[in-house]
Amino acid sequence: MTAPKTLYDKIWDAHVAHEADDGTCLLYIDRHLVHEVTSPQAFEGLRMAGRKVHAPDKTIAVPDHNVPTTPDREQGIKNEESRIQVDALDKNARDFGINYYPVNDIRQGIVHIVGPEQGWTLPGMTVVCGDSHTATHGAFGALAHGIGTSEVEHVLATQTLIQKKSKNMKVEITGQLRPGVTAKDITLAVIGKTGTAGGTGHVIEYCGEAIRSLSMEGRMTVCNMAIEGGARAGLIAPDETTFEYIKGRPHAPKGGQWELALEWWKTLFTDEGAHFDKVVTIRGEDIAPVVTWGTSPEDVLPITDKVPAPEDFAGGKVEAARRSLEYMGLKPGTPLSEIAIDAVFIGSCTNGRIEDLRAAAAIVKGKKIAEGVRGMVVPGSGLVRAQAEEEGLAEIFQEAGFEWRMAGCSMCLAMNPDQLAPEERCASTSNRNFEGRQGFKGRTHLMSPAMAAAAAVTGRLTDVRDLM
Ligand SMILES: CC(C)[C@H](C(=O)O)[C@@H](O)C(=O)O
Ligand code: SF4
Image: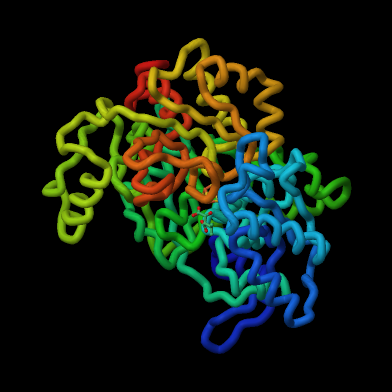
């Protein structure tokens, strides 16, 4: 009998092309996603060496970070550097003959939303991208993680990656979530518990009844932030929900191939008795709608709480909390639900999918954004945008006073014209809240789409359950 394996062990073992004596492995890569920020030098390296892309049919490119989300996507580009990156991707994608969704293609969007949407991401695969939030694709039971630009070049040239195996970590969310609590609250609550270094050196498998009950969209939200918890990647074993989501997508297997694929996918689970190096368990019922108060994703509390004081923390965290509070302009003891906001951003690869927009629209419907608050809804892809328009969500947002944008990373990071002004405070559905992330001196509070929608309506951080 072979020893019981985790899901991670199984995917890893299926992709090792070579193992050196010190355990360093050469892994075969099934999908290589490419965006404009981390790929120009990689393609240039290839060009200079006179090499081709090894597997152009497994390489998928889309511009997202720099692309303006206003209709003037050509003229609106932020600066020369952004222009060079977008143009370089366009030229490289065409020169090297890889799959490509240019700016004017309805399928364009944030790379981590486009990949699954088009059926590129499948269970059991290895998926890499020069982007830390590649972890998102782990929701399908794929081993997916970010790589650096030199590795991007290596994968382009060889379709392999040099890697050492990580440890196994299990994050179990038992039971059911309470009303108003979402996948975003799960993933933030996990980081609140483990800290941003809790997953370091590990691949996390998320499991438990509350995870099983999530849609694919919700699972992607959970895995998206595995990286904020320090992990190499996040994984969720595939099941009927996964297969249902994949079936019929443009690049999903068809006919007999589908049956063959299903047969293998159904073996992709952690065996009874497999070893995890670290285990974290949270009761689904104990998770509340949460918001971040500081400049790290681990600075997270239930919305019913108050702004903490630096003395509430231990060791090195005291000074970090003091600095966070100063940057965020917050006074200890203030109820979180009394913090007034200036802007609301609904979008990003964490929460820019159709279900996220539905959740936000359900709160906003028939209401108006609070006076003085700027609200922006940015669908994660052109197809999400079209779907939202068809369902009448765009209308709900626009009638409430939100700006209805084109697809892109937008205000998740200040690489395009969408950004906060200094000291502006934003209720944001994105995944990072460090200093300046959404604009120079901008202040970010991370939360779920429903919570961001609630904040938009009241003009302050708000417990969504009060509006339900
Ligand atoms: C620009 C890119 C390299 C970066 C990442 O790797 O995550 C970005 O997507 C981010 O979210 O900060
Ligand atoms: S949406 Fe944000 S987190 Fe996602 S890839 Fe773009 S910049 Fe990175």
